[in-house]
Length: 198
Image 1 (tube, rainbow, N blue to C red):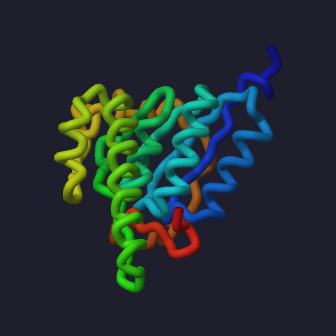
Image 2: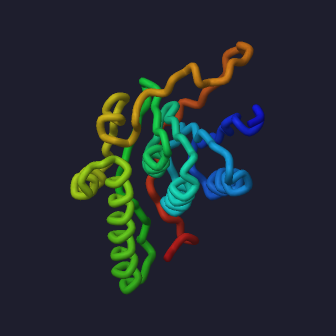
C-alpha cells in the first residue's frame, strides 16, 4: 500500500460551524469516502442542523477521528463525541447544552408545534450523546438543561473523548513566526435560523 493511501487527511473546524463549513467538510468526506480522516476542532458551535448532519455523516463514515485542540462547544461537542477515536489536548474545554430557537415572531399555533419539535430534537440529541458517552440519557437531559462546561480530564471522564492527543502524531514542519490568534470566546448557541424551520 502506497504512502499516499496510508496518509490520513486532516479536516479542520475552527470557529463557528456555518452551513458553508459543514458543506465543505461533508464534500471532502463524500468525495474521498474510502480514506481515513482526522477532524481537528476549535469551535464554539453553530447551527444544530449542520451539527446533526455532520454527526450523522461521521457515524456513517466510521473512519473519522476527532481531536479538540481548544474548545468544542455546543454542536462542536457533538462532533467531538461522534468520532471513531476521540482525543483532546490537556487544556481543552467542552460544553453541551440544549437547542435554542428564537420564536418571538411566531403565531401561537406555530409556537406550540415548534416547541414540540424542539423537545423531540433535544431528546434525540441527548440520546445520541448518551450512546457516545456511555452515560444514561436522563443524565444528559439534566446536564444539557443549562450550559454544562467540562475542562481537560473532565471531558474524558464524561465520555466525550477517549484520551489525550499524542503530539507525535502531528506532522513535522518548519518553525514560523508568531501568528495573531483571535481572542473571542462567546459560545455560539444552538440556534435554528428562520430558514431552518421544520
